[in-house]
Amino acid sequence: MTETGPVVLVVEDEPQMRRFLRASLGAEGYRVVEAWTVADGLRMATTERPELVLLDLGLPDGDGLDLVRRVREWSPVPVIVLSARGREEDKVAALDAGADDYLPKPFGTKELLARMRVALRHARSGAGSGDPVLEVGPLRMDHDRHEASVGGREVRLTPIEWKLLALLAQNAGKVLTHSQILREVWGPNASSQTHYVRVYMAELRKKLEADPARPRLLLTEPGVGYRLADGG
Image 1 (cartoon, rainbow, N blue to C red):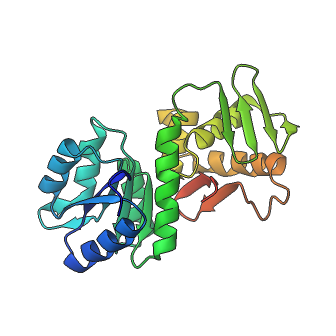
Image 2 (cartoon, helix red, strand yellow; image 1 turned 120 degrees about the vertical axis):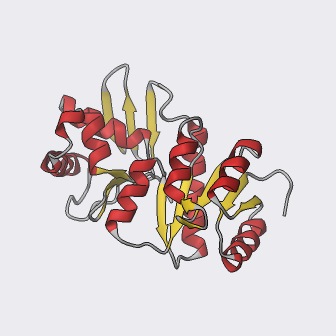
């Protein structure tokens, strides 16, 4: 293990899972710090300033979602939830609370590491910082020129399509729930109009995907929302 890799805070109350994550992440050069309660997790998120948080939801002194909400009051650090709760409702709740990703247990090490790389890359890129040009894989969006292209092919977008695609691009690799998308693109009064998102995503796929029926860029997270592929 190196001493220069990203610091990852693991908030998990199962000793076996902590040992597994410590060994797996350490072998990849990550520096792991550990907590097993909401209180300890919050304290270490403050003192250790991790670059990424891996969080279990069922903790002895409370729900991990409380930790996400508290951390989000002051920090944009990426949070990936690792939980045995596999229902869509749990996933939506975690993402709406401010988590960046959700991986149900049991999970594979390769998938976890891939999602960690995406979360760290997104955090470091500052994609949402106002950069006039966004590039994600084959997608390029120039906000100053109001031009979009895929693989060098220009794509003409309506104002709503542009706003929706820009939101996904700014959060590339991150799942956005239906309610998050509706709130950001159509405003708080549209929170129940989930058909808006389906209709406009279908139109975007027609314009961006080689085969809209088998999308490779604009991906669906069934029952939860959408994600713009970011290379994994």
